[in-house]
Length: 362
Image (cartoon, rainbow, N blue to C red; front, side, top):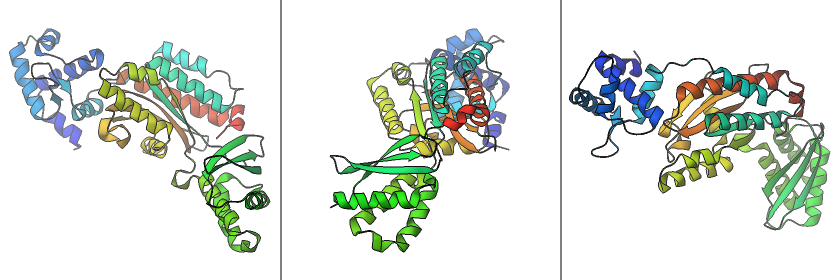
């Protein structure tokens, strides 16, 4: 028996009913729920005093807590997880929301990048939360590369692929890099990487350097090695680009300066893509929607937010990205989860079957 089933089995019918109504009321209103409120909601008459006794038992089990001494109760992270796994009933997406998402993604002649941006905007608008989409990376062969120095010790690699797309990649220049060494390294890259994808380039360049050390001075070799390592993305290769919409929705839902600062920290992390690979990892364990509450993901341990996320797949059933909604832990999960699920499935179909998939931009 799972821990969720065991906990539910340990509750009698009255405790289950009070717990369920308390969580549903909290998710709907966002405020601590008192015994008098629950007493008015019960099908069978039950005094506030009797309800308080049950609430004390639920509190001792770690399912609810009191944010203030004399306030009502709210579900804990453990309580929310129990509710989601054992009590929440998920239906189909509402017809109006289905129509809105279909309308946003109707034009299949646009690039996948544009469609994903529309999907993120639609999710943010409908949920009134922040949304995020991880876009698939481009994997077209390289046509040619140019490298331009910047003022802060970094360089920009301008990569033009065979299908006409252009990407800009920033990386740190090796100390002492001279213009002639940069020219040598650029020529080397163009000679050896043309026709290869970015994911193929890192291994290819390592082998080629060993065979061509005489063609490169030390500085040029360092540029080639560091540049290709940056382009390959290290352990985060293939995680794609991140689209985030609706930051203002999440900030406006935060009641205190501390909460707002936590949300800002969360979005700083997202914008820097520090945890982009982890977002995909969260979505990859099984098909369908997953929910992460607070510290269940290190990404949200400080902000106290919840993430509803689902992967989307190409025609080969390979996960190529993910999309979801970030909001307070008192999300309307019954409404948000089918919304995210429907959007992910629709995006997967577009990525697989649309002419726009030929225009993916990494």
